[in-house]
Length: 71
Ligand SMILES: [Zn+2]
Image 1 (cartoon, protein in one colour):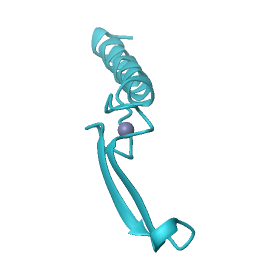
Image 2: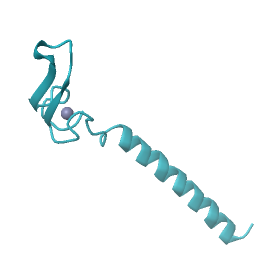
Image 3: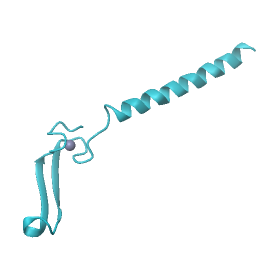
Image 4: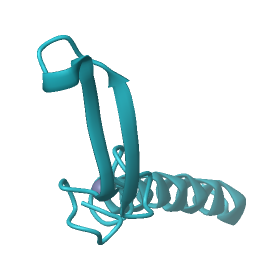
């Protein structure tokens, strides 16, 4: 076993740790609300036969994140 082989193993471990940590931060804090896309403000309007007037309408503060712009 020479030192370059140990160095390659350490680099592999570092890459694995990097991917594990980045995956955790993505699932936790950096998950942006898909309704407002991180702004907290929404402007939804699409045809909905079940609603009065035939339109689904939601404007202003996102009810999902309450204006925080995130979950
Ligand atoms: Zn939101």
